[in-house]
Image 1: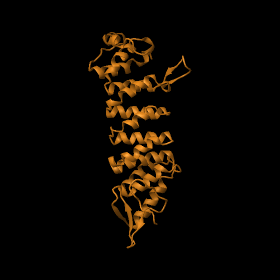
Image 2 (image 1 turned 180 degrees about the vertical axis):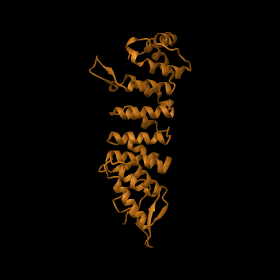
Image 3 (image 1 turned 135 degrees about the horizontal axis):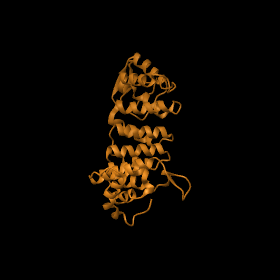
Image 4 (image 1 turned 180 degrees about the horizontal axis):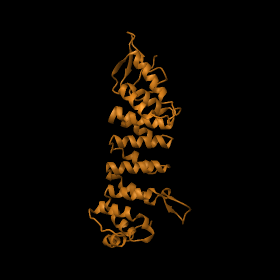
Length: 270
């Protein structure tokens, strides 16, 4: 076994988790480049962990089993997790689990590597990347989240909004606002577009990041009957942005926010 792990850049072939030094001791490089000695039981156990990741993701108890065996080895399991993430021969759901486990084992040190998977061809791995970055509370990956807002997959776009919302990334508020005009967030033919479910999430995210420039346009929208289905979401954001609390009832809310609707004059129609 001649493959020596170098941080996060290399994966493993089954059965080659370590190099052997001149004293015959198995060694593994941890993410910081430090050599960690492995006993034979470690090598065998890590091989077993990799085989677990090949199992059907629907196998009862598999998720807890993967977590238990990963945390048993902690940093020693990192190479296995990376291999699973990078190798499309493993079930997608298990690659998701490997991503989450890598973030839990390595913490914030794993963020740069995990962020690269936001470009992965499979939507599930892109979502896993964003979800793991959220769990690590990584608010600085603005370019990653901004691009994800325009992702072909609706699920990826929703996860990007969740990251921005929970991490309170105010600098991306204009990018979120632009989603209101992005036709990929609507269904149907031109001239007969219908809002998809993500529009409600977009509106609420605008409130969570307190995008003040949106308060006038949102107040204008809440006045229109054709946006009746969005009243709760519009009201939520307006309350978040302004710090005011509206009364109950549709007509009462419309009247309450009418004072802001004048600020929307001349804005683009949705």
